[in-house]
Length: 292
Image 1 (cartoon, one colour):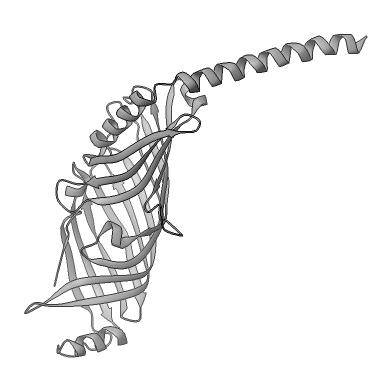
Image 2: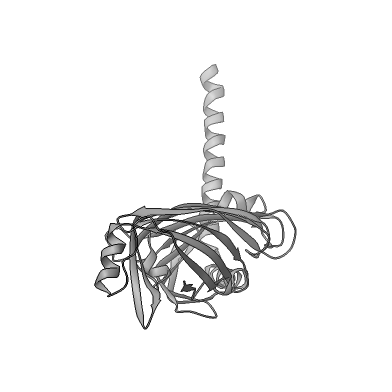
């Protein structure tokens, strides 16, 4: 008797499952991918103020877009080349009336250990409501971000940002945090006068930023290595586009054995061990200036 009741129930569940699978497959097949990729590109450019150009795009499973060979450029500064950017739409959030996108940025497709940036952006479907952003940086080469001053260094970190107000998504407004660590860092083109420049290397670097609306405060900045150690503080004033954001950072470097030998090789007066050297990093984020 119980078996006679159980079998119809299994049959109803099977029909329900088949209906759901058919609905999801139909949604995937008929999804307007072309409109999605155009919408995502325009929203990213509007929200960041950056110029984003891709050589090619294709469909990513199940509901997503892949862009390849992307060039990201600020109003000032050299463009940053990115190998792959993938955006996947979360179907359950979409059915619930929310826009939730998982982004994955692969800096170099051909590298054995390519740098990755992963983050999730959540907002209303119209992208006009409160929104949140949370993500990670994994093995990103500093030379790709700041080629003018960084020839070596690997960056890792976490970031988050949110805005509880209504209105279009923009990364200037809202509250956020950024915590990063870098290893094997080389900072080049530090001006010393008479056309001479100094390069300093640090085994590790740590930075912690806290942002409110358009102003980020550098709460902690430090590093150490054979060339010495350094500490710093300052601000980053966010602007549109992001590359035009203004840095104002004071850095105190305490020379080590490595920096003393480099100064001697450049024909400069010997830098006394333990004597602080003051530097300033100022100007737009895309092209900062390092001055004494």
